[in-house]
Image (cartoon, rainbow, N blue to C red; front, side, top):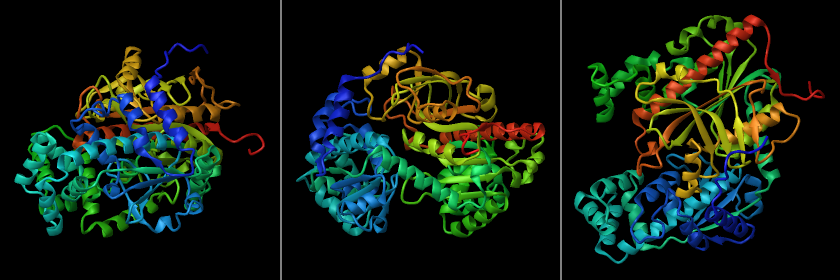
Length: 586
């Protein structure tokens, strides 16, 4: 079909990508300083002051939250899809290194305790995410270094580190003066450092950051192999044959659906109330009191789920988590953590084994007792990054019986809404394939609005799946904003490319308008707004609180209700959906 969406390609962005991909072909280390000029020239929307002497606090906080705390010690970042490739490259026993986790970007990483960070990547999207992030972090780190190096502040930070004490108000004020940050800006930086503020600032004051990167075994085959190993690990760790089952595929998270299907927090309401009263967390107690007094609009169930996550992480957490694991198995839910390859946890839910009395009241649909005659399962995964979504869904459709539906719950940036709003697209332009996908979204505002307290539901939207969060600039955003694309994310396009291949006898095309309305499976996509690029500093990652919880559960309720209603109807009709196997396999 003739393409009508104008190209959003930017010469500066294309030059930047060509530069780092050409450099990464070498078997030697690539110095990040080689990319600083092209990164700065790109004028990324997330790093508008890259080339200016003042500190770009938004970029510094954004990258700090998406890199592990050990990044302050790291000199070399080694990227690879597999443990074997890392071993062949001379990095033995990587999985025995110290695990490294970032606060808001899920990616498998290990730190050797000295200067090397090994990162498992699932697709080129991880490269497009990591390289600009490391470059931006180095640029801003070195601005901090120039301002703090050789000042008395470094000695006072050293005293804090030796004493294991936080920086006092006077020291923070002095650092803020040197960095030219407001009190609010300093509070954001301290919060992003997650309790390591003195240590991180001391490292920045003493040493200039000079990152190097290496890319090992990053071929199409390597990515496919990693996805295959990921799927085999799931198949080997669930007691049912997925190759014979009808599957509702959900890309979301590994907590909200389980909470709704088991009501594990609601059944522990009194325990959680005692926890709130005894924990001494003013944020929890203030919110609890406000809800009890009807002083704030809120959903009590969502609040309990939010508290339950903190309860599990507390001292009594292990025992409670063990009891919950037993309850999950009792109602046909198996959790499979990721292992060595894609950092994508999975849950398999046998619908026939669910206990209707345990369902959250919001997802207890009419006829739910008929599910005892269902052979269908929900396969719920932690959403992958970018092209990793294509790899995952392609592998899944090759390994299951029938695909009943694809349901996506993901975070996105919004150009016309607010943090916590829910966006429902009917058009997705994919920057990876340059295709524009048209499809019938299973959801509209009516499906989500009854369960959303704080935000607005924006349906009939147009989404764009970008290559990376940093690979956008004002010119780039202006082009697709003028065309009505207001929902910016990374996974929907790759997922729809996999849907194309699951329903057509050919590989997905490129640079076309693709009509998926005839696809013989249901497609439901919901995005909640976590960032507003046109409003600097407004990002859900910094203050998740109720805006994220509210939107997450509203979308999760909508998805589960849709699946359960469809499966109840399917049981009544006695028929199934699309068979993803070829004639030779069926």
